[in-house]
Length: 358
Image 1 (tube, rainbow, N blue to C red):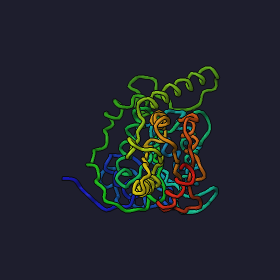
Image 2 (image 1 turned 90 degrees about the vertical axis):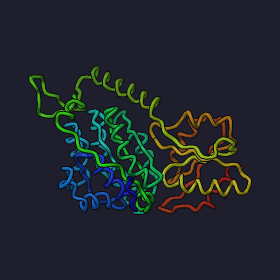
Image 3 (image 1 turned 90 degrees about the horizontal axis):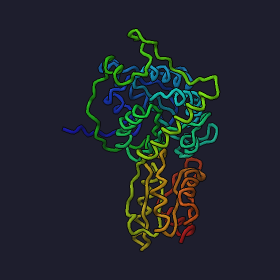
Image 4 (image 1 turned 30 degrees about the horizontal axis):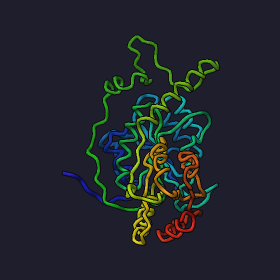
């Protein structure tokens, strides 16, 4: 029988982490994602599944604890909000360079700087374009419901381990704080040490079995081997782009205009789409579920079918750049967004659609 509960988005992340057999969580409280750590503390999974839950002394400490846990092949994760994710960027780059699977959760708030505790989507560049130093990518999942907050924990780990690459759930304060019914996943058992070694032969587990122990590092002092590492990374990223793109389309078949939005703005955009259709304006919505890999081809395919596209974002215009690159000038692309933590009403979006595209 399915277990249906009423949870905040942040709480759903925590419940899903325990049920997915996560080995360790290392984090630090910051609004609007503090409920993730608080809920894990209330659940006390160390008494039931053996999951480690630790409030680190800082965001920098937390991401380096993730590095250590991931290096042993464990399922480990962290969470924070925008300024905290900024502090984790060096460690995230190290994780990508060492090809270590892990899950990061960013419940975005407004910036730059300390900004506001209100919701935002202004970390798109930071996440999708890399954020830290070097040529690396994060597999980025963008939930638009509390159910997806729960579902993407398991999906994030599956993709992270499949490609030995950090994955991130990029959400915002609206989804993190809102409450909805959610079906929780069934309880999984954590992997045994033998299963871990079989699934992660690259991991540094302390067991050598007469072999040279695995060394986890992102350091390579000679340029030629470092170039080969980077070429291998790029080949892996191309494979991810070919096989892991996810998106949702609603009323796109007959659309004259396309709204492209992710996360909470996709929900508001869907209502705006319905209002526009009531006025006789044929609008569809395309929701990227993976922000990286981005649904470039899917968007490009609509360039010859629609009269215009509106990128709907809680920022000054970031995803709109990738949309314009996708369509390559074949169709008009405009941006509409609010800043400072202000979330627009659907009627504002309909007005913007008319003013900018029609």
